[in-house]
Structures are given as C-alpha cells and as structure tokens.
Length: 87
Length: 201
Image (tube, rainbow over all chains, first blue to last red):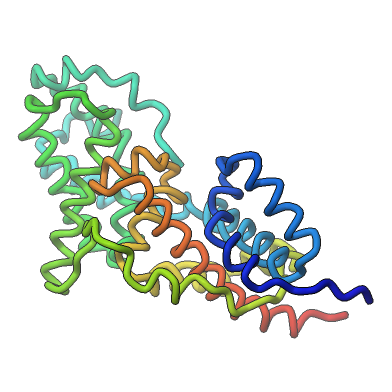
C-alpha cells in the first residue's frame, strides 16, 4: 500500500472549510486544495463523506415532526381562528 | 424544509387585520415553527407554548413589521426568541446569541471517529433505532449549536437568514454550523460503527 506523508496540520487547516465545501460555497482555490487533500488523506475523505451523509440523514427525516391535529386545533382556538380550522 | 409559499401572503392584508390572511399565515408556518420548537426543546408541551406565543406576538406586532427581512425570517425570529425564553426559564445560564469569540472552538472541531459508515444500507441508516439516535444526538448538542443547525440544515434557511434571526454575524453562524455538524457526525459515527460491526460480510 502506498503511504502518503500525512500532514496533520493540513487536515486541521482544511477542517474549517469543509462545511462551506459541502454547501458548495467554498471559494474555488480552497475547494481545489481540499479536493487534492482528500484524494490523498483517507481520514479526511471519510470525514467529508460521513459529514455529508450526516446532513443528508437529518434532511431526509426532517419532515417527521408533523403537527398533531389537537395541537393545531388548540392553536387555532387560542388565536380565535376556529372558523378557519377546516380550510 | 423551507416554506416557499410565504411570499404569497399579503403583508398589507395582515397589517390591516384581515383574519383570513392571518389564518393562512398560521396555517403555513405552524408546521415549520412547531418542528423547530420541538427539536429545540425535545418537549411537545414547550413546543406548543412556543407556537402559540409566537403567533400571539405576531398578531400584536404585525403593524410594526417593517419588511426589512422576509415575513418568514420575522416569524422565525419571534419563534426563536420565544423558544429561548422558555430555555432560559429552565436554565438561566443559557446564552445563545452572544457575539463574542466562539469558546472552545479549537477543541471541539477535531474529528476522532474515522469509520466510513456511508456504505450501510438506507434501511439500516434510517431504522427506528437510528432515527431515535439522530434525535438524541441533536438534543445532546449545546443549545447555541443546536439552534443554528436546526435553522440552517433542518429548516433550510440561508446563512444570511440565520444570522438575521439570531442577531449573529455570518461568520459566527458558519462557525457554529460547522461545530454542530462535526459534533453530530462524531455521535452518529459512534453509533453506526457498531451497526457496521454487526453487518454480515
């Protein structure tokens, strides 16, 4: 297996950019630098992949907290909006 | 995700006291605001109180709404303030909108878990048990990180909207978002690592 000289300082330096990278708002130069680094650094590659997956899982399950019907009813009553409940 | 229909509401009608328009606004925002409150508090009763108080405040103050931000951002801001008041009643030391240096920033950034669990099948990643783990992990976040994560990644608001809602600089929002995401990744990695170990070869 090819061993790549591991520059931990680089990992730390680029860590601050990975959120912007995932959101697609990282400036191009830094973006290329980060991609070059993760192509060689297995740990950073895993961090980026699992971070993306983490956000994906939360977004995928974000619609789970539906408002219970009785909460909606109590809300409309408390705001004197009963007449609009069934619209 | 983010309400896209907010622009269809008429601020003029809302300001004139139009009940039907107010009901439409309540209808549109009940879902997102309830979700925010329940994920922030982890408690349905508190979430319901936040929801009611938010719309009562909105009704009282809509005439002062100056449209410097969107109606959506304005409502999230009220809801967030209401939610923070409930949190502060429980934990008076809670300070969520401090604009000072991000304490502990260097310490809590560094990843410790380096297991690649992305290959787990979706039904394993989103099993009932995993979903509970996802929720618990959010509850384990420090409140100020949790709030930024919920607004940005769950509600789908932009960095700019989140900074307006929380009265924070965009830099501070980004910093908290990064720490929140990395923290959640660490927690989920610990859990999925075990699932991975139990996977058949």
